[in-house]
Image (cartoon, rainbow, N blue to C red; front, side, top):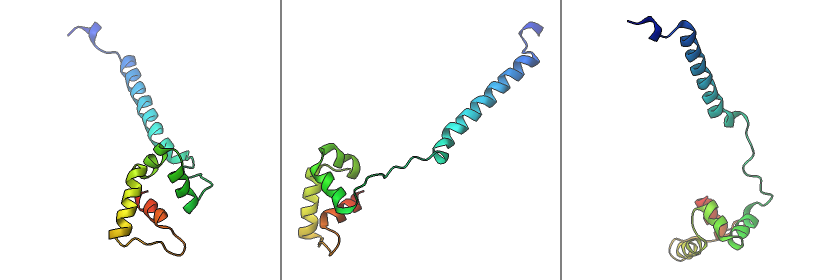
Length: 103
């Protein structure tokens, strides 16, 4: 076998070093969200105010938060009220109950 095409010890060491750096970078990238947490639920609104904002706000917002369009939300609310026995309680409206379920 020709000696000039065989990898040298320096080349092998360089490849191993680059592979180790790549693995370390991948580990840091994958684990960083667990160490550097950014708050997600930062809305000042709670409960019924949040639901009211979803119902009266931008149509895409209710889709993003609950996974259904406003039309589907209203139809589902009517069906659950008429046939499913969904009733408002003293502290929680039917809309809020459905939003909690869908969220």
